[in-house]
Image 1 (cartoon, rainbow, N blue to C red):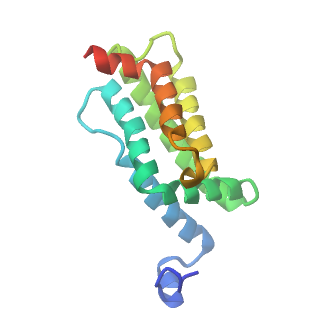
Image 2 (cartoon, helix red, strand yellow):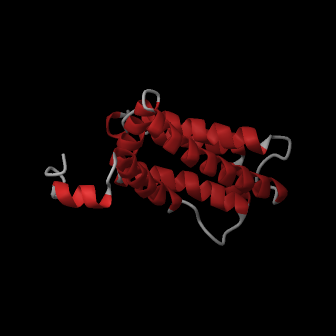
Length: 163
């Protein structure tokens, strides 16, 4: 595997001395790519919409991120070390989304009657569902449709047009 990536096995073990360290590195890299979907400095509703738009972009440009995260998510059910890494990642992502949704509600982008904690869970569940099906083999437009429906539910598509 290291040779397939053009990396000497000794170098790999130097930087990643254990399986857990390698997985943390992979998850860290993937989450760094997903963090690029946040639009810093914009209004909360725009940040939320930008993340969903950014996921669309990543699905098209870097489908391997979805494949890797999907595979690791599946393995987390059988491997406590991977499960622990995923739990930390999901917990941090959930807290970020919950805060973002709360700010978007205060700014009038998202219905204030909806629970931010539940909405954050819904966004994560949708994203995780997209990870489970390889994006490259998904019917054309399915990712766009799923994210569009999520935006519509959140009221983001309407608020973007209204502004």
